[in-house]
Image (tube, rainbow, N blue to C red; front, side, top):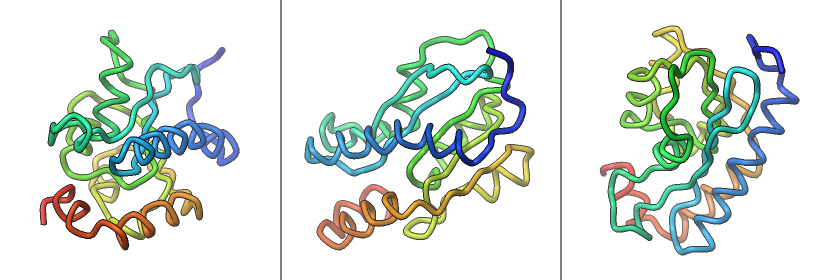
Length: 155
């Protein structure tokens, strides 16, 4: 497959399905419903994961981190795409910048406006989908678990 220089919305939505499945898996485990997937420059799935802070008692195990770790070592992350159900927090935005991930597909940013604007200002392509399923997952979770959500976002 050739390098994917710009992602169309249909591809982005297809990739988002992988992240949503991860978010649902995390919720089923009693965790926070945030999922992510890392795709290679040619569109190949490199890694996927979900927020495991609660399950692993590990405050650093965010969905993007889990997907990044599942992908294993790569010679370079340039041209890769991080797909996440929720706008990445500052921690995960830092990961994207540190390793030169080129694009972030964001399922939604209405329940949490993370660092995607900052990433865009620093040359990362942002595809914001405003996905209804992602919004509903987070709204329902936050309504039922406000203390756990506030812990996750550091409030």
